[in-house]
Amino acid sequence: MPARFVNIDHDTPLLLPPDLRAWVPEDHLVHFIMDAVGLLDLSAARVNHSGSGNEQYPPALMLGLLIYSYATGTFSSRKIEKNTHEQVAVRLLCADHHPDHDSICTFRRENRALLASSFHQVLETAARIRVLRVGDVTLALDGTKILANASKHRAVSHGHATAQMLLLEDQIAQLLQKADAADSTPLDDGLSVPQEVARRQDRLEKLREATAVIEARAKERHREELAAFAEKQERRDAQQAAGKKPRGRAPKPPREGPRSKDQYNFTDPESRIMKTGSGFVQSYNAQAAVDIESRLLVSQAVTDAPNDKEQLEPTLAATSPVIASIAAVLVDSGFYSAAAVTSVERGRDGQAGPVVYAATGRQSHGRSVEQLEKRDDPPAPEPGASAAAVLAHRLATKAGRALYAQRKQTIEPVFGIIKAALGFRQFSLRGLGKVRTEWTLVTLAYNLKRLFHLGARLQTA
Image (cartoon, rainbow, N blue to C red; front, side, top):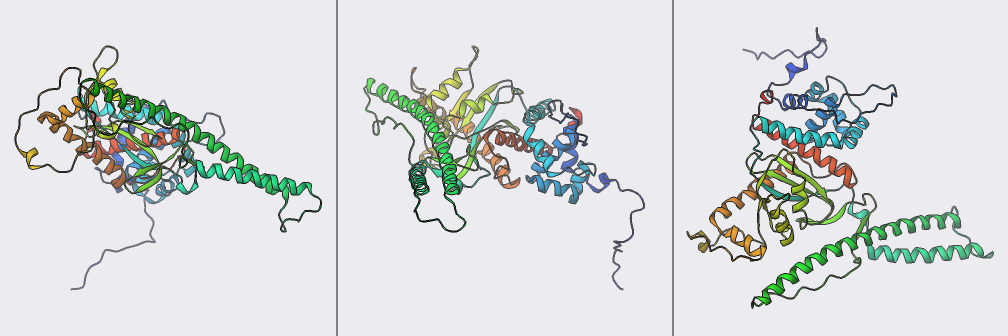
């Protein structure tokens, strides 16, 4: 018996206009995002009221389009515009409209307040439907390097910039001398002395601007290094006063001024060359805090600092006001400093702050046989003990070890999902302010996708 194939007819038009909702499954992510955006207060949206005559797309459409695109791994405004024509789910979301890439990019760039407001409102929704607990929560903090929209080959070091400035000044002097000499040898065809002088002067001005920024950053770094040096010296003096022999070499005071390899990038001056596991890259340092129970991000920030040493307090300060109280904070050794831990636990307005669980140094992978053996908790440190001793005792207790183990099981997988599953590894925007806006959008998209996979029912909110 011959096979009976389905008749494929590309020529006969549809008799009635199609309902795009019938072409997308009921349990599709796009329906969830459309419902979620419908619950948000979008009064913070920035729209054009100049009366130019051009029709504008409503904020709900543009916000939903950006969230869905970022949640499904599309970050380029041109690709998002393309998807409004090619993807059925996106056509449904846009009601068969097609915002152009410039409108998409402008909305994303200029609506930082709306994205921040939406981030908090989504957490409020999660709290109302009892997915997110808002009191006495435990947060895991970490940072990750996200590539900047700039190449490190467009950067210049302070040492190279200084040498180039001297060379350019010498060449400009030679060219001006040649212009004054009536019998000097002419330049090659098509080249003129005024043009060559102007080109070098423009380059010289850019290098001066670069060195000025590098020197300003060096002053800020020296201030931070002085604080770290004072902390180490104070700890060493306390050990000597207690009759204990300090371990290691005595700390040396930091050297003032820029270093030869300090960098400035001409494409995105606010980005920095940072060290990662794969080498040195032009990037930003994205920070986040996750609730260890719901795995929702409750704090997000971006800094140009190459490490996390001073990011504990700013990241906690950026925690959404939806979170009423924080019981404990889990961070790795990169966040540890005695001053930051003391400040966080001291709290504000007469209320004690959260308890910090932090490693004060590198921890070896795996556990030794001795660590596997059942043992009692060590005695608590004496009153007045150093912050390092207190933190070491916390992680040595059975309850502390169990709680601290939640850190790498929560925040690190979140960054893995953002980078691997969503595919977000590089910012599309440039400049620290715009990059912070885009990171807010990324974390907002992650939270909504997380709620979707948790099976949250938004209509009960």
